[in-house]
Image 1 (tube, helix red, strand yellow):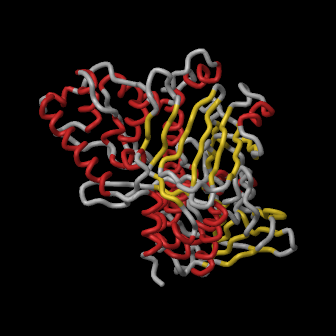
Image 2 (cartoon, rainbow, N blue to C red):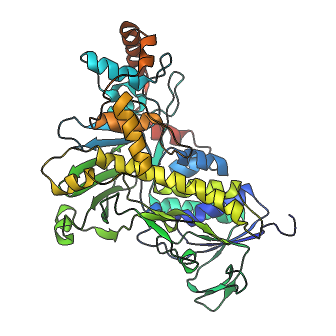
Image 3 (cartoon, rainbow, N blue to C red):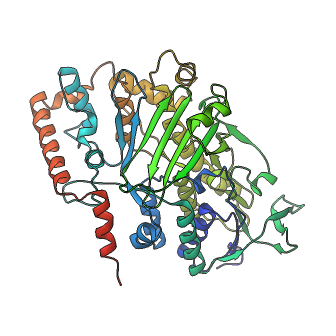
Amino acid sequence: MGPRSISTIVIVGGGIVGWSAAAALKRRIPTLDVTVIATAPSPDALADRLPCTLPSIVDFHADIGLSDVDTILNARSGLRFGTEFRGWSVDHPNYVHAYGPYGRQLGASPFYQHWLRARELGDVESFDAFCCAAALGAEGKFSATDGQMDLAYGLTIDPPVYGQMMRAYATHLGAKEVVSEIGEVRLRSEDGFIDALALSDGAEIAGDLYIDASGPDATIRGKLDRVIEEWSSYLPCDRLLISDRPAEAETSSLDQVSTFHAGWRWEASSPSRRTEGVTYSSRHLADDDANAILDDAERIEVRQGRYSEPWFRNCVAIGDAAVSIEPLEWTNLHLAHSAIDRLVAMMPDTDCSPVELWDYNRQTNAEADRVRDFVMLHYVASHRPGEAFWTDASTRPLPASLGHTLTQFRERGRLPFYEEETFARDSWAAVLIGQGVFPRRSDPLLDEMTTSESARAMQQMRDAISAVVARAPSHANYLRNLARQEPR
């Protein structure tokens, strides 16, 4: 390393996010000296607490050298293809937002455009029926790979067990652990950079770069400024109840999200636990009344929004310290992993040049804002007339980026794609179509292919999906087969 290279990194936060950052840094830049100050995870740090994850977690594990044995078997994780949404539009049936493709490109047009045309012409099977992952999930089956289909899956983790696995891996790679709390954040007078952290036990620790993975309070990042973009005008929920139950005999690869009059609730299962939750608006439901919906649950206040500059001077906030968002669509840990990947790829030297930090912040914020848009889409596209919460949620002013997406889709069924997207166009289409949002007129590019040609191709897709489902094992059997393959 050069004389100005970052060589020592101090991470504050002893939860999943902090240990994930430590593991990634030590795996990908082994010469770094990485110390984790293992403060207790904040109860409102959702990335450290929620069970459901996106398919990006599989890539994150591969990048840092973790196997399925580590992350699925030893960590007692389940496998998930997506979420079944129940009751989001009273005029339309329940639907699944699954990962992986819906159909395949036909000619110059994406599959969903052909499905929309077929719907206009008469009966057509549900949009879900053309997604292999959704079909497998509906039948309680699982397949990670298949020669004829692209499949993508996330994990349903047991957060405490997963966190211990990540801690063990990070320390195995050479990360050091200090179990303490932060007493004082000392700043340099000449430039406002963090100079050192004074710990509650009297010790002091210093580094070239500080990572705040402490949760929404942002224990150290918050000492530099508190410039936060609030999302309460876009997203109506500010309370969360969460409860863990005993594991069920058979777990599903689809979790469930159901609406009620003042918000929504979920159920998700891993082999070791079942988690239930309620997300609601305190303006529309008193906390005591919420307890009647889910008893014996922990209440968490959710302040949705993000730091304007998650990386400022020599301190970068990741996870809930950078962005706090409700768990609809399970993006919390994904955003943390994405920030960690970006941090490694864009590592500056010790001067933390504002030019370099600006680009990191631009990309990180763009990604968070599109996640906000995708979550807000569910509320905007909902249809539950006569209920005050849902009327409020569906009529809020739109951010310009979401307004652009909805305008394009409602006119011609087109889905503009932004630079830092978490969800593919098929995911946007799945939610829009599932909740009954349809374009005013069809895309003229469809004229390249006749309706009969489209129909034949769609039937071939359905036949191929049926064949995959027929030969796939059950979710439970897949996990048992994976265990049998573990090296002894």
